[in-house]
Length: 178
Image (cartoon, one colour):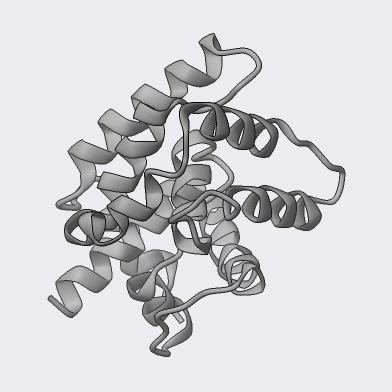
């Protein structure tokens, strides 16, 4: 399992760092100015382009079924729902986001990470490999909870956000396995 010492020097060194900072700044502004909180189609598309990268075009036709109204409504509920049990809150948020066409757990995790970087990280094969030492390409909500249960303590140990730990793990793997 990855340790804080292995990723400590990766906090701002990632190839994705500048783009991530721009997106985090965008969504931090949205969090403070858009009440109730929701995403627009443009916000949603920016997240998809960032998360899916070269795979973005694969499902574009299918994703177009997500109208502006549907995106605003679904993300509005998912991003404002609060529950005293954080695991249940996560299940609700991810479940709601996954009702959008083209959104599975990894994309839902990207949405949550960009909007709430202090609480969430992006689940993907690189992070999973470094945290659990196993290959994976599909993830469930339970997998995501398991991943967060490992990286949140690292965030506390390092004094970083969960997103910063996640990005450092991603960069660590990218350098180890190009």
